[in-house]
Image (tube, rainbow, N blue to C red; front, side, top):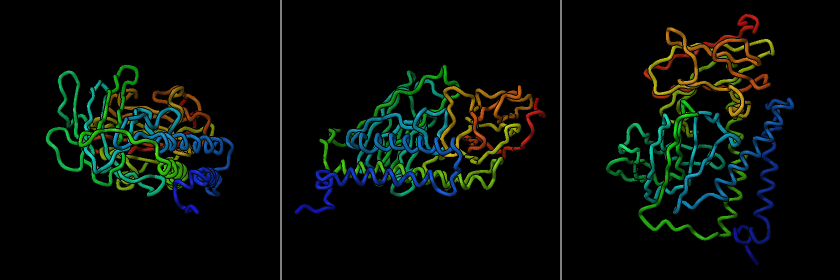
Length: 366
């Protein structure tokens, strides 16, 4: 008689699939929780959110390349979003193994910011995605034609070296754009170099683990960021500094100072945000829905950055959040939402000014 816990037996008898489906159904409790808004728009976005997380989970675990033969894939993008995804970013990731050694090669392109990170953990299993090493293009040796090479390993290497630990399980790449239309993204390839990078054949036991990991990711990731949103409601329409340690454990860029919060506006109200701009490599501000998904930046003005925002003569900036355009500079569209989340980022700033906020009537701005 086969062992019911044996992964091969679970694949053969269908238990692996049944458990996967049951776990997905249970993930709906996140959307239906008593603390979660029950209005039709938030509920609809919640179900779409779970479906998007499922796509991400299937790509990350079931279809993911082998850590022995990694292949960088685009992860969060226009229709897969999580954890306050940055509309200015191109995200890429691939599984890695902290016991191996890899080489990254490519061309820098002209994108404003390029950073590589190694991470440990898993939103579904550990609830964390801790950064175990970081390297950005600004600190790398790059040839005149933009080509570069970097080694990824747990032991220090000469030249461009991206550290990791034995527990590291993922490589993430962030490319941040200021001028989306004209900046050229980097081209990047990764390969294992301490042994032949030969992918393994499909293993039934791996499929069992992958299906369960994908389902766990949907529940774990959604719960983490719903908890964030609930916390943000405690300082609605304000922008306090987010706990750096909490950001680090969740996989945030170590060079970013985050200001996360919640916004809520009546149809005739606007949120006005004002701040001086310090010397910094980059800054941006964005709107997101309750689920911490950026609003649809493909078609609507929902974020500004150092390049796109119009500043005042004294170097400060004012951003206005409202349902309709009151005829002012730097207006952001709430896209029919009465509430949502928001984020301000300072990257490598000499100082971190506290953005000031106030709610006003649209008629006052007009």
